[in-house]
Length: 488
Ligand SMILES: Cc1cc2nc3c(=O)[nH]c(=O)nc-3n(C[C@H](O)[C@H](O)[C@H](O)COP(=O)(O)OP(=O)(O)OC[C@H]3O[C@@H](n4cnc5c(N)ncnc54)[C@H](O)[C@@H]3O)c2cc1C
Image (cartoon, rainbow, N blue to C red; front, top):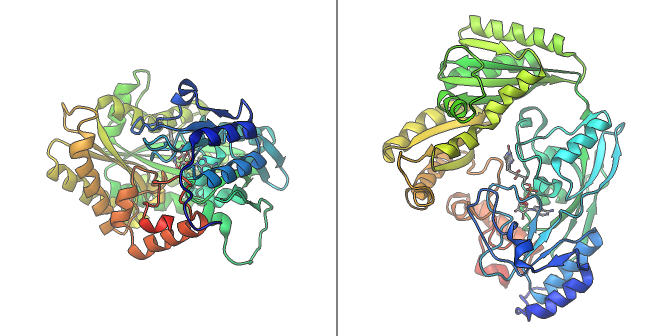
């Protein structure tokens, strides 16, 4: 890779060469065809692009990246554009291309017996779920954006979701990786090796790098046997500390079967019930906190799982860890419980503006963090309301701060909202946590990461970025803040 930044050439020459390389289906600079891909999923960022490139193969991605390097054209990789941190949105200069992987949507192979599937980057998560199920297997990672999120995006953001408690994030699912590096060379590590001690684990370096170190073109992912049993319960609790005790109790009793443990405060449940008129509260009385518990097994059937969970919850009731509980009578009721959980963000959006923070602290500290941070924020920003919900079992909650009544959407976020976020991230850092548990840094948190992250870690990240992308062309302005050293 070269060490100096090539001056920007005439865009027309670049576009002609790119068009010759990719053909009419592979490149457009038509504003109408690009429009949908210039704004992020949350609608917070809109940029401009020189063109939208949609290569159909790894070879085309490699040739395109090489062309971009020779012309000094920045590249913004994009999958389903469902990311939450503005990582797939170009800046406003219009000098970058969007490199969409969506045309590369082939499942190259699926070996049910070996529990392995090789997916191109553009395979949509839901399609992978369907293919895995048809083969009598299961891909153990899911999230609300599964109808749009692609394998390349999931790998690049190290996505999490609702099964991390048992199965881990994307890092744990990737057995092998193929990626195009900044000079157009192809890093081929698709073959899964259980043991491999040839130095650095380079695929793990690329996972979670948000398109700043390379373009993921394919991944070998692990598959598990299809489940034989599932049981889902909704419980009502008096406090968030009781929720942590209940988590530990159910972990002990259900062992590996415990797959999901999501907490929902009363305020969030009320908001969802108001938002979804057909929805019903699972329990007859209201409780300050609720926990949604899911257990899945690939050996026991649903009846056996249910019996174990019933016994566990009965013991928890006796110990005073919970106040009430209901176990879903069938799959439909289980899905209804999940609908309540998955509708919190939409229900809150309907109420008014809010600042959303995807944060983690050590699991054991999370209840105390919530109990300390919520009143602190509400006291410093009168009229706001802090709510925390989500993946308690992972030490990761969505810590949302709702604007005071009457706040104007679009204005409040840019003014007081920014101060709110800064304070939330300060608190998280003081508690030894992370300002991004699963959504990534993108452009949304790049300044906050630079402000709050360990300087040694930041310096290492800059060194890696310079080594792998010396021209600074891969997703500039995302994750790693541009520094003068990046282009020298
Ligand atoms: C309703 C909803 C619920 C969600 N729930 C969760 C959740 O529970 N947990 C969670 O972790 N996330 C969640 N997300 C966020 C989102 O789905 C994930 O971040 C997902 O990984 C993004 O995939 P994508 O293909 O849409 O990527 P994009 O949004 O297109 O891109 C995301 C980032 O990855 C980079 N990128 C994309 N493809 C590639 C590639 N092939 N090579 C290199 N870089 C690439 C982009 O440049 C960008 O930085 C949710 C989203 C929605 C809409």
